[in-house]
Image (cartoon, rainbow, N blue to C red; front, top):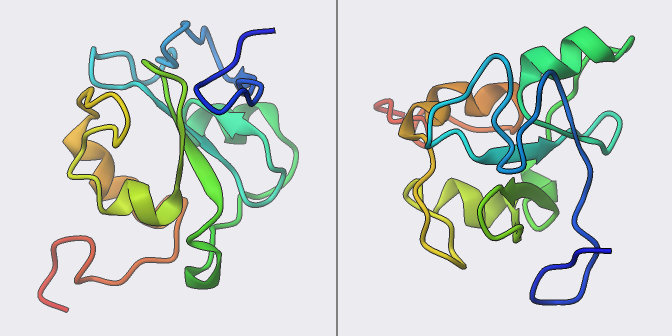
Length: 123
């Protein structure tokens, strides 16, 4: 079985037409290389639309108290970042440096409990 640097199994990524680097039918630019573990089912999905299409339950978000949970998979190096690492990474993997889609920040509230200040608002 493939593994990352800590010899932990690489999570399965669910979704529509998921590529090895985690792009899907909905988001497939070269920067769309993350998958997020959903708080509700603890499954990694390429995007919220993939989750909502394939699951019969409503998605829930990771709370502020859960920011140390490993939830964001880099599709390039397969490292799983914590919520805190991902929110503070500047749209780059903290392990391999590969760029993530900066537009994903607009969707953080679909996955994580965040405030306006974290989303770029005046807070």
